[in-house]
Amino acid sequence: MLIDLQLHSTYSDGYLTPTQIVSFIAKHGVRVAALTDHNTVSGLYEFRNACKKHNIKPVTGIELYVKLGNRKFNLLWYNFDDQRPELHSLLRKTQIRRRSTVRKILNSLKDSGFKININKFLDKHTHYVPINYLVDELWSSPFNKVMIKKELKLKNPREEDIIMKILKNKSFSILRESRVEINKVLELRKKIGGQLVYNHPGKYGYVKREFIKKVKDLGVDGIEILSPHHSIGAVTFFQYIADEMDFIATGGSDFHRNEGDRCLVQNSWDYYKIDSKYLKGIKKIIG
Image (cartoon, rainbow, N blue to C red; front, side, top):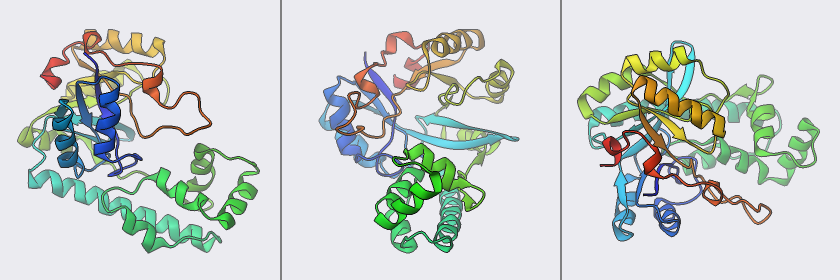
């Protein structure tokens, strides 16, 4: 059975509404799916209604930025009670911190000569302020385009170039994610339930087995194995880890948008599928 347990909408850093995402995955034969917007559950109501119309089983989900000591990583959380005020309080605090950080970097960029209407931009993003939308906002100004090309010394800079050389450059300001101590998440999970999954652990390179074991011992239930961020070697390694450490194995496309007319491959569903039969213990999440 085809599933997709990592999708992002316009409520965080995706480019499709929850309704549009469900139409997209329905065309690909997905039967179970989770909307996992960053640090917000605001899109879940629309997502569930759209899933009902397409006969897709929705799984309650969210993607959280977390930290364990100095180590920063992401967690996917499934099947929790999204109505609990304790959850909304935690998320609201992360959203306020994120908004404050973005405002600081926008002021710094404006002081450096970039053209941007700070309040107008922030008013567009009331749940989570995405870095990719900030890049889009800067790039939409012809004046800013000239500045960016000059600063980067590139005629056609990529989104990643702008992020690393402008938005994560100490000369301007560093845009960091608003992270939550993992122990706070684990304490909240005792109250509102659900399963926690170590998200695309191979995205940023090699991860030590000792750290994965530490995460497991803390109480994380699963590890995301099938991901467009993982090579076949990484998939094999994490499957072995899931067996060794008795993790639930999950998978998701990390879908944000189609890539546009110039790209032959539009999205990860063009080149791979997530089949539940390859995922150990997945029924604990999808039922």
